Structures are given as structure tokens and as C-alpha cells.
Image (cartoon, rainbow, N blue to C red; front, top):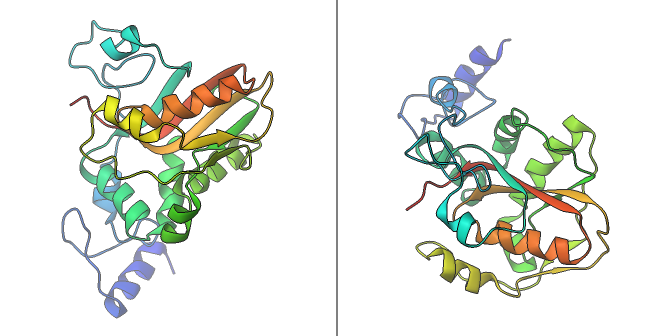
Length: 234
């Protein structure tokens, strides 16, 4: 039985509707999103900062004002799309509503990005409280897909989150940075290693800056960042 017919049968028994358009789910791979809405998720190809990947309105700019004023510790951030519409909804379902299965179709988007030459992949960690509450680390699940596809090892015990942080929603970049101070620690030597930090979304870049800065202090030679989505400047 093909996946379309299987999805139709499952939807008859367990009715569900696409969160984006309200039509019936017609594909098990990206359920509960329908095939049409999922295929509408596209890679952002417009102008963006060549360092942190924040989208620009002008094609003539190359580096954003934040990166010019305070260059981040990471060399470059790569993001698949803009955090909006179906992509934002899918990440929300995956991250906050327990749709763990979505890590596979979402993770495939990361495989379309240029892979930097790195020695290891480091998922952004959750605190113990956060992990127990969510039941899984979304960055770790995404990292596994990238790791297996490219044959690059993951390091999951070197960067830890030791402090719970209040919600970052609605905070400025400065407030987010203050919020995260002291939340992460490194517990191994990353000397001379080139690393790829993986997360689901980059909003202001505070988490990416904090993690990459710590990895460099522990001896890493270079750090890149990869995320599913990049929030537009606000």
C-alpha cells in the first residue's frame, strides 16, 4: 500500500487535520501536515548576513549591524528557512507539542545546506529539567540525521546546560544574552577541533554566541552553527 493510501486509511480511523490549512492529513511522513503544505516549505534564498544569516531587505548589504558591532564567536551560521508560516508551525509541533516524529522530515532540510568541514557535531543541550519536561532534545534528534548522513561524529557529553532559563520569548538580544549567562558549561577538551553546533531555531543568536564562545575557550579552532530556521530581524 502506498503512503498516500495508508495516510488516508489512518485519517479515516484517527481523523486529523493539517494545522496549516485544515484539510485532512494525506501523508504519514509529515503528519499532521498535509503534503501540499509541507511541500510549500522552501529554503530561503534571499539576501542575508553572511555571518549570522539574518535576512536582509536589501541585496546590497553583506554583514548585519549586530555582527559588525560585536562579531560572534562562530565563523558562520547556516539556516534552512525563515521562522514563519508552515516551517514555524512544524517546529512548534515538533518542539512543544510532542510531535517527535517530525524530526525526520525536518532534519532532511538540514541536509540541503552546505556542510562545513568539521570534526564533530555538537547539539545545543537542554537542562535536565527541560529534558525531563520535553522528553527529548530536539537539537540532538536533528544532529543525529546530519551526523549519519555526513558520517561526522556527534559529541553529546562535552557541552552541558546546567541552569534553567526563563522563557526567551519577547526578550531583546541583550536580555537573552543576560538570561543565558552561566547556563552552559564545557566539560571536555575541544582543542584544535572544528565544530558544528546544531539547534532548531536561531532568533537573536544569543544561544549560538554563548555556546560557540564557550567551545572556543575550551580550545576549539573554529565553530559553525546550523539551524532549521532563522527569525527575521525585529
